[in-house]
Image (cartoon, rainbow, N blue to C red; front, top):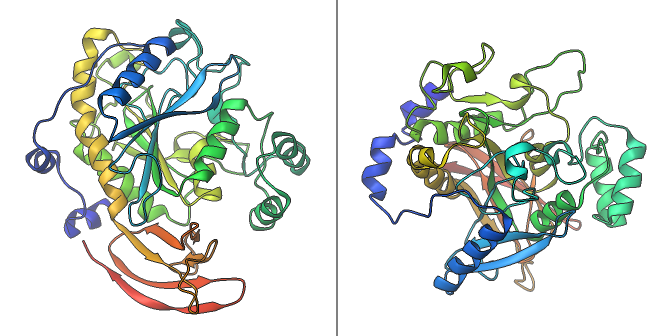
Length: 386
């Protein structure tokens, strides 16, 4: 697949991207606790009031605000024709990331050094509804959390009968789920530390007799291209050889080419990227930025330099998509929750409130069909070019 993308010219090199983007203003590179980060985000929002919007989507177990910083020409509401993207970071308290859109788990001044869980000792990236847990657990927990109404719950169970949470859903997880479902995101990445690679869905697999098992999604080819778009532009992520600069941090089982199917690396049940793919219109990857989870301050500049261009280039991938609006033929009004498919196998997306949809796709020909409660369109052939 990677050879195919290279021949099509579907991914940039780092040199090409640097030439296109050029230099830009460098951010503040330092470690921050929740209080310092809050002040920094407010200062950014105050400095760029027409391009940013800072708001909280809820609070953590300890009552700390969960901040979202929107950066856009239209920061306060969704604009028709403008695709929505998100970066999520600090899901684990002991992974100090230097580029973020949203922070969910960093509970205390020193929590980032010592622990990956929230204050209830729950790993939030094992806390989303899972595909392979017990049905009764989902019914009880989703009812208690009030995430879904009856109709949505029925639809979810009928379409994904094994889509269940594995443990009590945490406040931070509920906040992320509600927020993600309230905005028509189409592409996302969760930023982590621990090695240097990109992993993509599925993380989960029904087997519990092995630590790893290849588990591709119906959109595997798309996810490979999206993952490679990041690793290719990274200074060393896509190169053969060990993942980490410090030899003692490397493992013999680490993937060698910069990208990996999540479950083929190690199986994770209740991960956020699988939940995004199965239950929203959003395609999410997990990016491991650095082998050292809490790097010294004097290493942050090098870490930022490695990742700043890939981070920007990955955002640009939202424009490689099939986009359109489904309207009522009589009134011209956009139709909500119309399903849109591009073949008989890959993920189906739904229209937003204004009838708009975005469907990421690779170069190729697709039969785009839509289905509504009162009508079905048999489809039209579309050729997606570079």
